[in-house]
Length: 428
Image 1 (cartoon, rainbow, N blue to C red):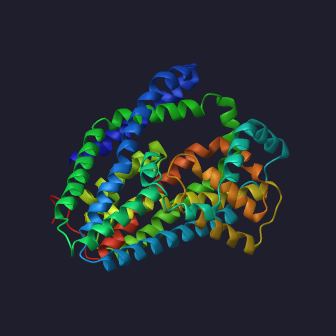
Image 2 (image 1 turned 45 degrees about the horizontal axis):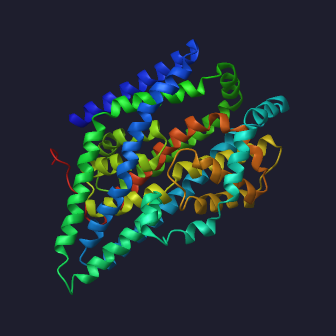
Image 3 (image 1 turned 180 degrees about the vertical axis):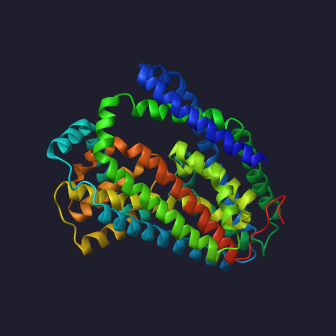
């Protein structure tokens, strides 16, 4: 009942935030919202980010160290990575099918294209320059930290996961020689303390969500005429992304939960609402991670042994929504430029977007940077991102919801396969 109340408070806060953003845009008070309201949302988001890295470190070390054998960790890790990469590839494929059927951008006039290009030239140049500094090979090599303390300070989540796994395995191997129980107990207590901080932070969640939604809508509506033109020109592109997201969430996640887990679909859907609403508001899988872990453990019933490993890893390498969006965006941009993508080029989109998702930072807007890598791979001009920058933020909010839901789905399936699902409190 308490969780249901939180659902409603967050949803109501989102509604009021949208209204406040629209009113501020219409009355010319956008500056007030961005100056005074936006910092409240930033503080709430920073609180969540503050505990994300410690939670990953403490819970992962405790979870791995509590295993009696490392082979079990290898088995869980193999299932997790296979499911994450598999669902991402399927998501991109669904996006490509939908965008080819809808064919957005085919009737966009040259005047509209030039207007979009002119509106976002400076921002696009910055994103393209950032993408030139990204290498898929370097991302994979970068999984291994040279300095774990630097990785902790810089929020390099995948490096933190790697170090925590190594430390957990080391404690497990030392168990045969020394008594490490007290060390493991310390990490378990620290993990529990972080979860308690999550509960405290979520008491102000409605205020934080209200502030974030108000600032996002106010920022988008700062120039209503331009936004109206953008939405009119890009409506079919946006619909293609949203339809593909709905199909993937319904079919792929529905099948995985319904066939491969012991959790009723209704319970899973209800349990994930707080995390999904927060993901939509923040556009950040990393910021949502503490709430995702809380929902999956307390409401879905996934054992901490699985959630502490699967969910932090998913926040970094599982980018179903981002990969799907990149597939749709790449075809849309190619269509606008009058380029026909053959089957091999679309297969390259699947492969490149899947690999690019590994090590991608779980922060707002990173999908645009990775999209430039995909465009370069298939020979589409990178400045094509100019065409979609105006509507990237609302779509980023939607695809983050899919990313977070995918993390929870894989955690549930893996836990079921290991017999590590238990009934949540108050349920039989």
